[in-house]
Length: 203
Image (cartoon, rainbow, N blue to C red; front, side):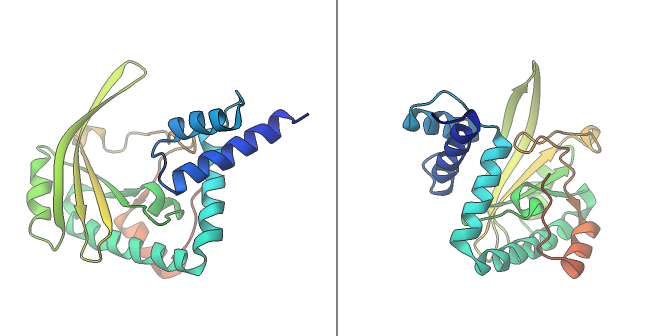
């Protein structure tokens, strides 16, 4: 008879597989589908799935993964310097150091109106694909943000989230890892690339 821990691990591995190969894009849906495939009712945490996903990417992508991470962090730094007026913060898998094939660069900036960030990006070599408002509800509170989707010269996908300047410095919790979403500021990223370019930031 399988233990609960063993079942959770199996579901984590299955969910990670679904996410890695693009069968699912969201952790919640990947976990539910994985549990259904395995015929069980225990769901792992997002953190458990994320760690399995990181392990899978490491096994499948090898040394090229580290090279890609360094490239993505360098590209992020260029963009952040270009947007330095808006207090850019690198978050997501490129900040964490767990970027894999298909990952994009996630940067948060603070501006009002947000369209001025879009106009500034148009003066760079970045290819703008889409810009739109997004609203999410968390614990009864609705948050609005302006999302800019683009592509770098090196064909890396990029998502820039523009938030109101009043939100700068606000502590946010990571939905996947459960820790504080600290990210990296421009100078911190620059220092990291010089001292430890492939460093991981995971609990």
